[in-house]
Image (cartoon, rainbow over all chains, first blue to last red; front, top):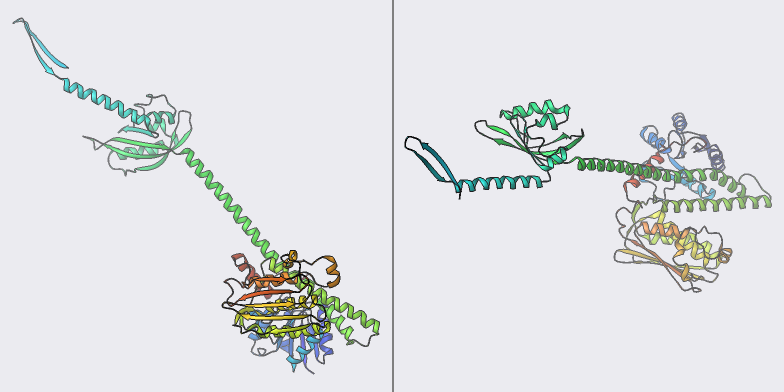
Length: 121
Length: 447
C-alpha cells in the first residue's frame, strides 16, 4: 500500500486529511511540524508528502527546500496543501521547488481523490 | 577772493613790507574737501551696515550712524575708544586682539569675510557678518582696517528656527511614513492571517461534512445524509464568501498580485464555459461561444478564470429558462475584447455604475428572487480587469438582457503585477514572500 506523510500543524486537519487519504486506499501517517517531517523522511520511505505551507517554526517551503537539497530525498514527491491562494501557476519561487501538486484548503473531497490518484498512480 | 598776507615791519626804515598771495584756489579746494568729507559721512550714515575704521592700535577712527545704532551708543562717543575692549564680547577679546596685532604687522593672514558677534551697550550680543579691507599706509605698510558689517542676528535666528521647523517636520513626515508603512504591512498581514484563520477551521469541517454526506464514514439514514449535505453546502458557501471578501480586500488594499504569463485566452474561456454548462443546462439556459482570432496576451490565468467564472455565474443566475448566453472574444490592435451577453431581465440605467461597487445588489425584491450572491463578484471582476490595465463596462436595456464587455491589453502597463506600484508595496511583496516562507510569527493554536 502506498504511503503518504501528511504535515500540518493543525490536529483536526491532520486527522481529517488522514481519514480522507486512508479512505482513498492509501496508508497515511501524520506529523505536526516541518522538523518532524524531515525526521520521518530520514527514517522511512514515503510515496508522497502532503505539506502545509504556513506553519510555525519551519515553513512548508523551507521543508521542501531542505528535501530538494538532500541527495537522498531530492526526488521525493511532495504536494503542497495550503490556504495560500497561489493560482494555477503558483508562485514562481514555489514552482521552482517542483511540487507535484498544489491542493488549496479547504479541499473538495471528490476533486482531492481524483488528483491524489493521479499523483500516486 | 582769498588772500594770504605775510607782513614784516622794518622799524629802521619805518615801513612794513607785505607779501600777498592769492589763495582763492587753495581755499576753494579746502572747502571742496570739507564738503566732500561731509558728503562721504552722509553716505556712510545712510548705509544700512555698520561701517567702522580702526587704526593700528585698534582704536575707532570712524563709525557711522548705523554702527552707533546697533551698538547702542550715542553718536560720536566711541571715536578713539578701543574697538575690541568696548565692542566685543569679553570671551573673545584676547584672541581677536592677537589676530589683529599680527595682521597690523603685515604677517597675519587677512580674512576678507567672516561672522563675529559684537557687544552692545546693553550687554547683548548681535551677530555681524563682516567684510574687511586693510588700510595701507606709509611708512607702515598697514595703517588700519576698514570694515563693513551687516547685522544678521534676526536672519540667522529665523534661519535657525526655519531649519528647526524643517527638521521637526521632516521627522514628523518620516514618522507618518513609517506609521503608514507599518499600517500597510499590518493590513497585508491581516489579510493573510485572516484568510488563514478562517480557512483553517473550515478545512476539517468541509472534509468531515463531505465524507459524512458521501457515506464514506459509514451508512447514514436519509435524514442524516440530508443534514450532512446541508452542512457541506453551507460550508462551500462560506468558503466562497471568505474568498470573495479577501479578494475585495486585496483589491481595495492594493495588495492583489498578478502573475502575468503569455496566453491565448480562447481555451480558458472554453474551459470555464464547460464547467458552467451543467449549471446552465439544469436551468434550461444555452451558452454559446464565438472564438476569436486572438493574439497572445500577458494575463494572470487564475484571475482571468475568476473574471469569466463570475461573469458567467451572474449571467446564468439572471437568465430565465429558455434564455441564451453569448460569449464572444475579439482580437483588436493592442488588446482583446471579451463580451458576455445574456437575455435576462437587464439592468436599470441608474444601477449600471453602482453594479461594480462591493456589496451592491439590486433592490431587495430582486435579492429575494436571486439571493445567494455576495454582491462582490463584479467588484472583483472590475478590480482584476483594471489591474491588467483593461476596462470594463455594461450595456443593457432593462427587461431585455445585459452585455458585459471587458478589454485586456496585450501588454499590461508597467507595474500591473502589483496594483500599488510603490516602494511600500514592494515591501509588502517581500513581506508576502517572507510569510510564505513562514517567517511571520504564527503562534501555535492562534495562527
